[in-house]
Picture 1: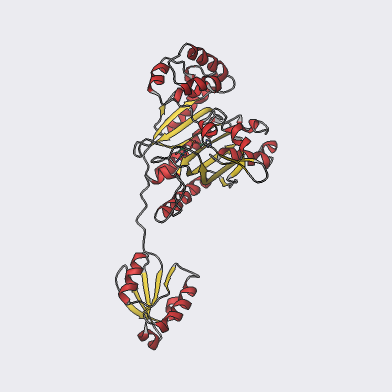
Picture 2 (picture 1 turned 30 degrees about the horizontal axis):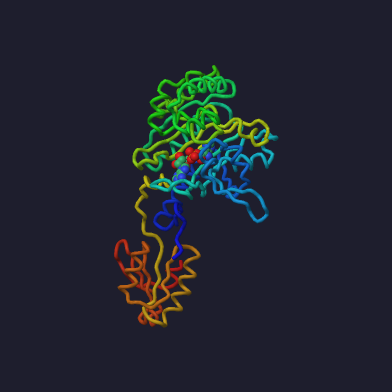
Length: 404
Ligand code: HAM
């Protein structure tokens, strides 16, 4: 029997209903904040991710679904959404026009990771990207929007915040860190590799021995330039003003290479080891890295599967109708009636003749409000039998009354 690939899942009801409930409500909130929907292709040139997410990241180094297509192109299933949106922004020449643009998106992402609870190879993200808004208020606004989305679904979280500095302060800090790491031979092989490729990535190494060593490492937060320091202070002040709780985690570096200044992660303690439910930050150099004109950017993405673990759907109300025939002759009238009713309301139809009891049971399973049945009696009287499954009342009505 052919099964879905490891780390990939079918999405069926009730999870599929939850998925729609989630993306619809997040879309509504994103629109309130001025974001518009964007959809970019799942398949992109591999170079796009190498140049944005970065060669030193695990995503590009180990986890890409990369292959050569029939035309000999090196392509890749997107591991995340930001790179594609930035490519589209440049392709539309919005960078040259210097327009402020805000996009939201959702859909599947692919990372060849070791599957476990909360970690899939095909997973779904809801993300937003905002361009040409370098004001720190935009960072605050993005975090407030994400908080609003999580609050809407009643999801508890811990917000971790850091500043990764800019091209002014980051290089000098990097030198300091490399200098520190030179004397530390006890670090793991991964960190030795990171020391040469992207040293700040050592800071979020999961190895406890490394972390013991990094207790004494210099921290970027203590080495920010006055602008970055001022902006970070302002961001915290705005969040305090809105009573958003956060903790500053100076070792939060994010797993993608394009970030500068604000970086943040929303973490949940209720879903096991894979606890990051959303992450994001600023990427003011990314448009340039991808050959666009200098344009600031900031965004985030949420992991929908991880959030779905935490969302409790509101009790669904009975809606719509179920139509069933009690004799063979009623099958055709039932079919015609249901097709008409479907123009205006949800109408489930059973093609087969069944007993009243069986139809009522089916109607209940479909969670409809009314069960309609037509049998010999109803045909003779030219009436329709209808039962309200909520107040349990039943009666005979005419077609005209039903179709309004
Ligand atoms: P990310 O932190 O790599 O950021 O992913 C965002 C979220 O996607 C994570 O917090 C997690 O909830 C979910 N996620 C990641 N990998 C998996 C997986 N294998 N299985 C299930 N869920 C997963 C980004 O992707 C950036 N593009 C976010 C961003 C947008 N930054 C700026 N704009």
